[in-house]
Amino acid sequence: MRGKVALITGGGQGIGLAIAHALAAEGCDVVITGRTLSTLKKSATQLAKYKVQVMPVVCDVRDEDAVAAMVAAARKKFQRLDVVINNAGVAHESLPVAKLPLEAWRQVIDTNLTGTFLVTRAALPLMKRGGTIVNNLSIAAKTAFPNMAGYVAAKHGALGLTKTLREELRPKGIRVIALMLGAVDTDIWDSFWPGAPRRRMMSPRTVASAVVNALRLPEDGSVDELVITGAAGPV
Ligand SMILES: NC(=O)c1ccc[n+]([C@@H]2O[C@H](COP(=O)([O-])OP(=O)(O)OC[C@H]3O[C@@H](n4cnc5c(N)ncnc54)[C@H](OP(=O)(O)O)[C@@H]3O)[C@@H](O)[C@H]2O)c1
Image (cartoon, rainbow, N blue to C red; front, top):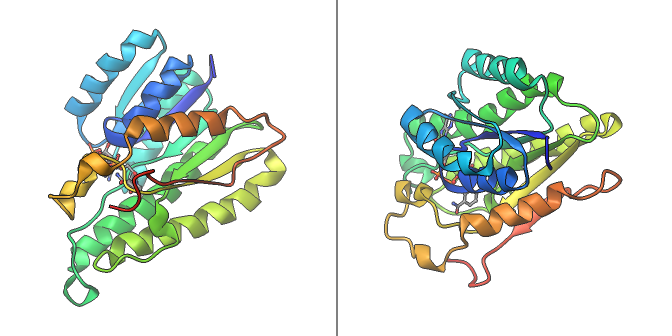
């Protein structure tokens, strides 16, 4: 991965930050984005130890103009992107459809589905043959969980986007991976299950090592779906 450039949305914390660490440890330059400058700065300081170039950029993936500006800044510094990790995501409070506020629904669809579309569309002109897009979906891209309709719908939709993109990009030699994770120990759980048994969950580092392995696959092969569940079983 040395000398390659990766864009990781939501790269300031959780799974995105773990992937940023794993890629930077391989010598990859990283662009990390999110809405919170203080978090991005702190994470960029941690990543400096790998002696790669680290570019923190504030960007709300729901905002078309902010996404365009973020990609333009990456283009100015690196001229290209080899890897795009669409990881930024939110969940919503655990509520049945009958009680789910429209605002909560919109927030999740706009971030997890439309955000993935906006970032991918803006980043594609910087990608070339041999590049890889990883969309961090969830096992909720294929399985329904009661009281999580917005999240499940967004992830099912993002799987549809991912599969379409894979077919569109196949002739260009750009691979598209659907990352489908079981429970991972991150702060996202606080928004819908604050008392979740986080100790039973996978570490973000475990996920990151699998992602890096998938990215290392020679160009004549492609990991279409990377499904990683916790060895301890569902939480
Ligand atoms: N943890 C799990 O069990 C699990 C399982 C399956 C899939 N996933 C998926 O993994 C991804 C990462 O989540 P995580 O578990 O690492 O949770 P997390 O620690 O809460 O991280 C979420 C990241 O997304 C960023 N983000 C949220 N809204 C954003 C927006 N509108 N624009 C830009 N960035 C935004 C956050 O940064 P800011 O708040 O600073 O913007 C943060 O960096 C999500 O897509 C999630 O659905 C997680």
